[in-house]
Image 1: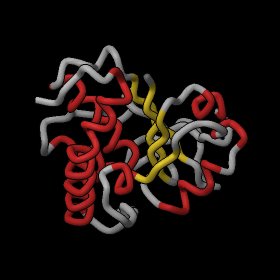
Image 2: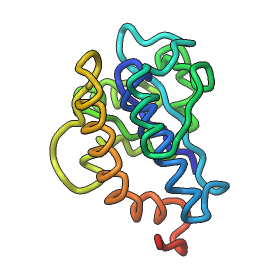
Image 3: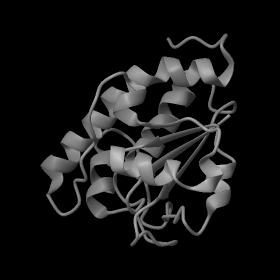
Amino acid sequence: MTVLLVCHANTCRSVMAHALLERMLRAHGVDGRVAVRSAGVGNHARDGMIASLDTRLVLREVGITLGEYEFTSTSLRDHPDLLAGADLVVTMTEAQREAVAAMPEAAGRPVLTLRGLAGVPGDIDDPMGQGEDVYRACRDAITAHLDRALPRILALAGGAISPR
């Protein structure tokens, strides 16, 4: 199974969600059964941009070290194959969900917001340019919603896996 995480530029929210979900999957012993990918769907998403410094700093605070060039962004519009290969697509906002769902490669794939996957309405707002405290709050919100969504992700990955 492949989970594709999408935000606007793939330098902040989807990077955090990508790193956090991979860690959660490892903790549950299923990282080999679920591949995690991420991309940006916004008009200014570009291949090769580095994750924002604030993103890397707030991830490091929770034990995830992401080197400056260890992760580079991917434009979903330039790589629709990522969408075609995804079993589950998770966006950070409703507007992103609508943009992804309108792409031909999304046909037949579940495209949900992270909060929607977790069973609550609303968006994960973009922390870009708002300082470390906003990035921390964003990281914590992503973590909380991934925790709530993890049983659904694990069920899609193979049913018999139960979260610890």
